[in-house]
Image (cartoon, rainbow, N blue to C red; front, side):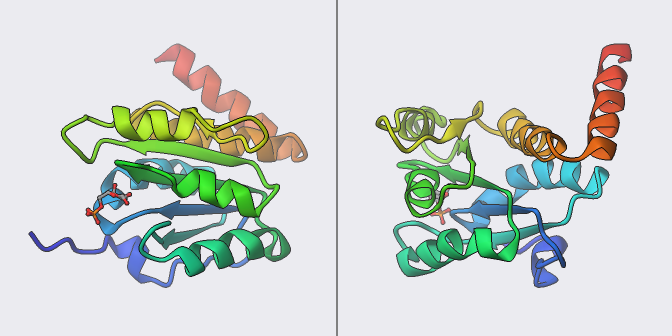
Length: 168
Ligand code: RP5
């Protein structure tokens, strides 16, 4: 099966002043992870997207994590399936908050990935979301909530978002 990149991934996807870095382990993760980036776009949050595997591209993973803070990134979202060490490896190279999204990419239905992320040993946390689409969306919302701690306008937009959810 040939996996094509979604249009948003082809544009170079480095928005000026990106606040959030979204990394996923494979092209095969992009459909689910795009459910979260759609929310970032709705909130007009500039973000950078990268496809980078912790085991296939270890040097690139290290460089992305180490350079993120200097580039102005405030939160990193990392999605991966199977033995999903990506968020943990990223968290080992940065003090930025790292949000992990476990993805269903194997016969274990994402439980493998969930346990890989949520069972981080003490000292190097990964804020782990639920498996799949809900997790991708919640990762985006949590990242926005973190940004809203120092952004009053964003806080207001979040309040409106939550009110709309309640009305639905
Ligand atoms: C992980 O392995 C990726 O995050 C993906 O979810 C899974 C399978 O990757 P591919 O074999 O589809 O590239 O590294």
